[in-house]
Image 1 (spheres, rainbow, N blue to C red):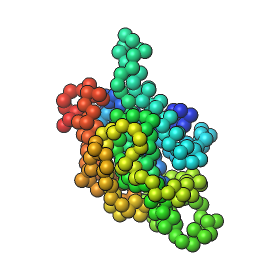
Image 2: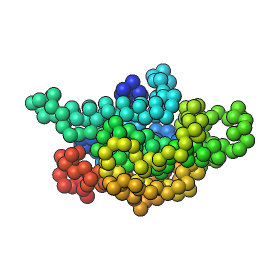
Image 3: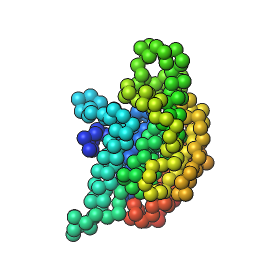
Image 4: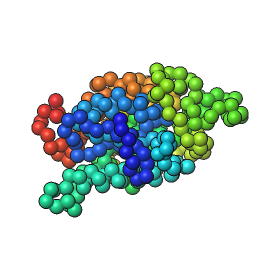
Amino acid sequence: MSRTTIAECELYYESPEAGRYRAPILLLPGLFQSFECWRPLTTRLAHRGWELYLLPRDGGSGDQKSAGATSLDGLVEQTARVAEQLARRASQGYAPADNEDVETNAGVIVFGADLGAHLAAELTARVQPMATVLFSSVAPAVLGESWQRARGLLQRWRPGNANPGVAPKGVAGTARSNSWLSEEPDWLLAALMSAGPGKSSAEGGDGEDVPTLMFSADDDPLVQLPAVPSRDTAELSDTALPGHWWPAVAPQQLADELHRFLVLTLGDRVVDFPDSVFD
């Protein structure tokens, strides 16, 4: 993955290897999941012709780190700005060659995992994605309770014992590589804990329904509830995600399922290739 800046946020970018579908995919990772954790999946999708962008919650790293959000609402706003600009660029990029001002119906596709799934569902009220894929969808408060439980009760009363943005040992210990780990903003745990019961990301925001594919994870210490689709347009996959670090160990079968869902669902809105892309 290379890096690029969109809406004043630094994103990781994976370019398609051959051909190019009309809609970019915006990836919103789950708690503590780094871009390296997602790389095996993005590489497989890029090989199939998809253009992918991953938005880290800290807004980037190093000298180019941008100011990150400081609330859940701020995360939604930040994510929506990025999605809007990606959708606008996609629409303008596929306008007729003789009239660059004409916009097509191309847009953005959004993938989100646990917290990222919540953000993906919330931003549909502001940005109408062409499709969404939600992995391990639960309400923010459930994530906060699971995160706090994973840290241990002693750390609840003595928060100075651990950096609040670092993955709990029981969660980090299931990662096969430290490169899969990413720290979260220091304020995020408290925000999740105070979020209230709310709705799960399966229920989405107030926008129109969009085609949605949902996945549940097995043995994920941070997401212990099965995904239950409540949208008329939601489809629940039979493929179980392997644990919390599933993007890094996801089989080729998952990438193929995602590719097939998008192509069959969106059709000529994203495809101008021969019928062989369905194979």
